[in-house]
Amino acid sequence: MFVSNLSNLEILQDRICCDFREAQISSCTLDTMEINGFNWIESTINNSNLNEVKFKKCVLNKMVFFRDNLERASFEDCDLVNETQLSGITLIKSEWNRTKMRDSIIENSTMMRVRIDNCLFENTNFVDYEAVYSTVRNSIFKNCNFRVTGDNGMNGFYQSKIDGCFFINCDFTGYPLREANVRNCVFIDNTGHITDGMESYSSIGLGQFTQDDFQGERRLSDTAAAQELIQRCREA
Image (tube, rainbow, N blue to C red):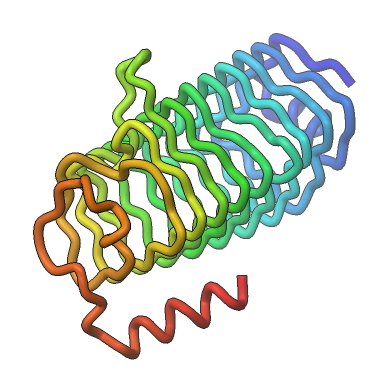
């Protein structure tokens, strides 16, 4: 299936609101569309507008999103898996709820003020991304790479609020959590440099980053909160 230069939502809904494989969608306007319960596999969407699009209970399998606009888009109960790529994407003020992203990548993308809640990211790379002033809550990051090279002026999760999250066996390059506010989080077996200035409260595992600059309390003082985080990690 090849769809190009379309903006009529009725026509687009007939063409793409379905399961599809090996499709190409180019230079289309899908703004405000609701995409519910479909499997998109081994396909490409490029140079298209998907602002305020709502993905719900979708599987995006080996998909490529390239130079698309997804401002205020939402992903709810979705799975992004198997080398799905979000490259050169605008994800400003997007919302991610109860979504899993595995073996995939977000690169060269703007994600300012994104909201992430109850999500799982596993074997996923965040490379040169701009997610400043974002909110990340109750989420788990396993075997992920957070890399800010400085080549494109990206700042990672600069001054973001990160609360109730696990970071397990992740690698941090380029201080991706610079000046973030981190609370009630657990860091296990991570490497690299997380920040050159960060506020941290009621978190554990930050002692491994001995060369980084922290302010606040490093211990996880709330035992019940710690047990809840561990249980959530086991269930992921």
